[in-house]
Amino acid sequence: MKCLIVDDQIENRMVLAKIMEPYAQCDQASDGAEALELFSLRLNEGQPYDLVLMDIMMPLMDGQESLCKMRALEESLGVLQENQSAIVMVTAVDASSEMKRAFEEGRCTGYINKPINRAKILVKLNELGISPKVWW
Image 1 (cartoon, helix red, strand yellow):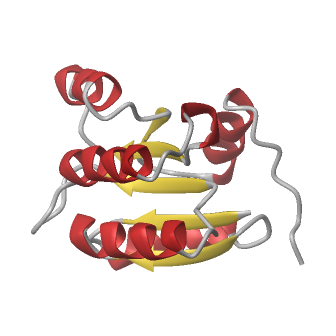
Image 2 (image 1 turned 180 degrees about the vertical axis):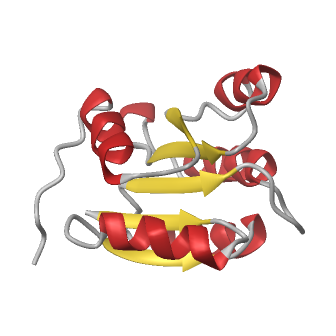
């Protein structure tokens, strides 16, 4: 599995990377613009991310904007909805309006509230039908 971890706080990226390390080859981005660049590169190489774990609140380009642009990129390349990357928003903000927007406008796959732990991640992956297996 290929995973992109997006968060402006290095500590959060490190926690997510440590959790995902046994299950996925992980890349990291510190903001939505960098995430979009990596997402586009992988997609154009024919090796799209299976999973994106993305913070909502970030400088430069927030998770909402990045999410919408990722979905638009997939559509422009003809990626069928069932083959699109699972994009899970990770948030410390308990804002139902932000999550509603992420689902409706960006078509995110799910969300997880911080603080993050292995159990939350594995439960969410199970809910999404993603069976994490040790990859190495």
